[in-house]
Image (cartoon, rainbow, N blue to C red; front, side, top):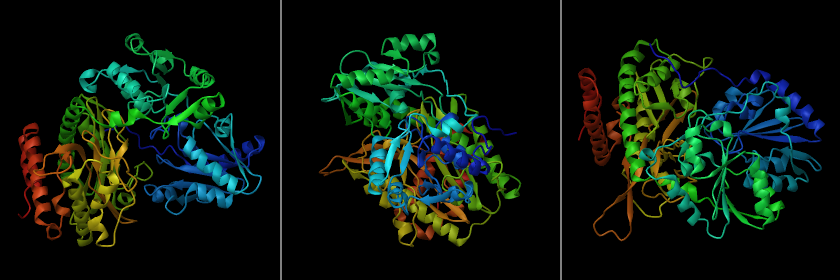
Length: 605
């Protein structure tokens, strides 16, 4: 009945081979004269989702999370992970040979300073590390009397005998009816923002896709072309891409915008800019240290600055309308899933994989679906306590009484979606209702907030935690992340987080997803997508902003403890559910309408 076409539940990261692979890596390190090696979860662009050919960390350790760093020394190997993955790492790696370390406990730099010895040579791949990362690691190594050494050939590639081929996705145009702004106008804006720099080195494929209005499928879940670009004040921009990826139509389109060049030419062009003493801007979060050093060694100057990130983050009118359409389309699929789940789950026969396949199948009823925006987090019971849990055939659980969490999203050509719902199966406990309601209070606090221009996500983040803090509780991930326009479901630089220092501006799209996780028991998260909009306030002395909620789906009333909500919070929830009913009722069949009325009924006024 249900099937999955866009995601696999196979456990491709196998820790059973870690001991043998670590031994082979250490042998190769000795051959290269190295005492150790840094293994980041990264490709040349620091992408969240990387092609199979770049999954070095997973191949070595068995850890399949989207962020992590291993340090391999002669006698030990450690894996650094953030709060999203502390539980997952312990479950996935072979603890006899890989030691997970939480970033909250210590940073890689501090660990290196403590554990490296004088005279050690710690290797790294300069294509897979940014200048900022290497600066921190080099300083730590020097403090220990050791040295950080760039390698010409990644030692893992030397021992990874069956490494997959590099991706070769075809590039296609992204129509102006979805982009809302033609590429020549975007490129003109970028040139005008270069300041005293001669050129911008574009290393983030999201920025490449946005600037040139192109998309591809080089990685899963995000329609990216893995490519670099140089955009100068003068002359045509240069796009470094394999010509085999360009069909006649897109080649003709790009010819009017830029010069397509072989990827290997990038190093030659940067060296030429360096020899001419030029200043080049770069994105500190994605540029390989290999390229900034090449420019500097040739005589040029590299300068941190990426005008594209903020341009891309501030969605135009067409992109926002596309997001509304995509969210509404996605809401119908989500509603059908929730209705199916409400009937199937109490019988105790469906599994996490069944639920993920069902939701994807409902989404595929829309011919506009292009992909999922990330692997569905379909988590029952204790698995829901792992914030970024990914169900596999090996981990698949039957959904039993308690809590079930599903976090999912879709890629439509007019927008990217992301939604999390936590659902009761059977009668929830008092503790579950208490925790869920506190998370809901935090979600509502963010959704309702009004704030002056210049306010950052870090200033808003605490609102989502206050009700949890009052009970001595918290969660370890950020409250929200930016979302792209048929691009990454996790887009920067905007975010609602303790580390979110970028001011929120009109047109930015962010998620609102506070949570609570009781290790080994259950997990809760409520996520909607919001867009920042201007707000008119009589007598206001500042330019003000607020949020419009784009996501439309019922929030499980069975998990709410009304006594914990104040009147304003109840009014928000009732109004939100009224919006859901009004928007979705005309788009579903009569039987589903009756169910929708019941699950969105007002709670006490």
